Length: 93
Image (cartoon, rainbow, N blue to C red; front, side):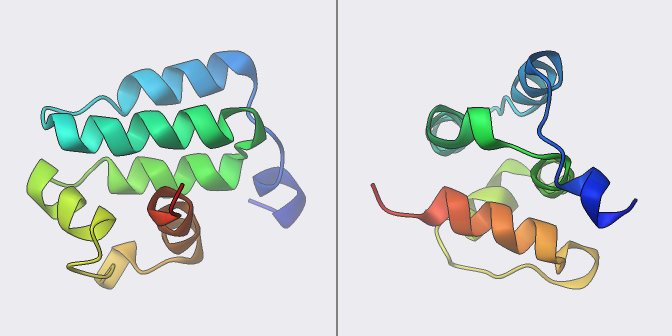
């Protein structure tokens, strides 16, 4: 995927689908994700969607560890897209 394609904003439908797919079983994760969409929803790009989708493959506990900075991304998760999304999620209000 080219840089221009990854910087393309998500359509409203794509954003809504990503938000729906990002629902979690652990309410604490849902709170982080809800704040992320509330703050950045209209600015999300294909790049952000790729990073968030990769994070959603994790178990709830592993995801919470990343959100709370108890761990940092490793292996296949150690990508610029994942780091960018984590920085957005972790940003204090």
